[in-house]
Length: 501
Image (tube, rainbow, N blue to C red; front, side, top):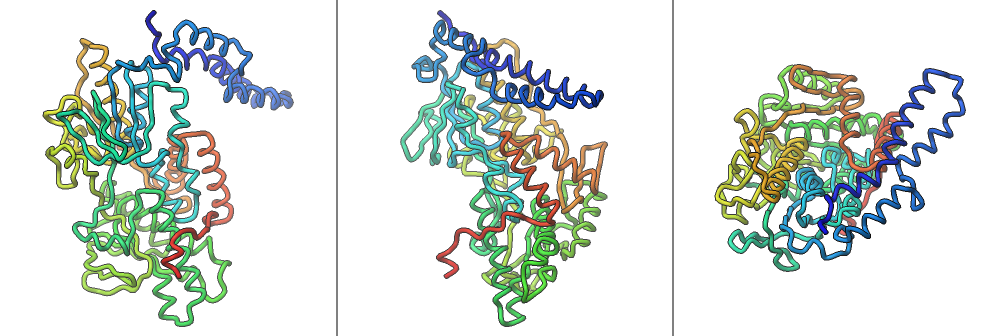
């Protein structure tokens, strides 16, 4: 007997949840209109529990699921029914890879998702971990938790070292894995423009480990300043220099300035933390080159109001353990952070395929690697001119759209769809950057916002795009506390003990 689509299980299982959610919002709205319904809170709590957890093991939903599993045993978790299905390997559990895997849940394919970590990271908020506003667990979601009810998706913890397009295998430390379709969503890393020796002194921020190292350096600088006996040493310790004036650099500079001026003002005795010097160095003529000039100027004024020194049209020519050379001038700074450039993963080298100057795989309008009909690249791994003839930006929405599109391509190939899939077209949803408390800029094309409205919108958008209820609640709680207390609440110095002794 033929197995039903994989989506039937989730559909049946979630019927009660949908009904409970509709009743919850309906009762909530009505209770706001009629103040006499003061006891409705208990019913609302009950409906909320049903919406989150479903009806339980004695519900009709669960009975239908058990009957389904008896009649169609192919969909059971540990069954061998996935054998013989087309094999899809997705390398990378970032925004693009995760979205592609999610979109393939109901497609008759066997998916293997490979990543060097066992979690999905919400990268846009990494800088808040680096500046002690959030904990790493607030922005990371275990990947296996997201696919525990998806028997067609297998997760592998490992590092890809090579790809053999002729044999159609992916090499990892655990051996070679064959594929029928390959999706490369390997993201990007830091680019020091040929000066890789600077990485030791100026860490970038792409991983949780990077954010924790930056947090350690920032907080350690303040602690050392408290113990410093010479004013000259203290000035160097309290100088923070960020290289790069894009969204990451702007957000880091604003967060460090706020932490020093409002979050730590009562914590030290030997010096005033608000005297900390935050310098933002940008090689371009203005900040936020991807934003309209008016919003970039607003962002610059907001940073200057926080006391950030901005050096435009300036280039870093040297970085060492105690300072930076900027246009031939020496600046003593114990904490230097890199937000100036990114480079793609070695995916192009794996395939020996053409790449652009940033190392991204040059793909066609269907996101396929030229000459390899069953290999796709998405997100920061790909150089796709699908944005009105321009290169698609390295943003989370772009990676998600690419992941969804590739899943459509694979579905069409597997089910032999006669309807052709149109070329990939990136739909720009807007750009956001926050500078500090009630200060942000937002560009949605026709609609451009700044100040408090953009700041509130920035928070709503980031909460909405996060995965997991726990992550959203934890982030909201920490943000609310930081809003009340004017500063980061996760001020723990961890790691790097050997280097500090």
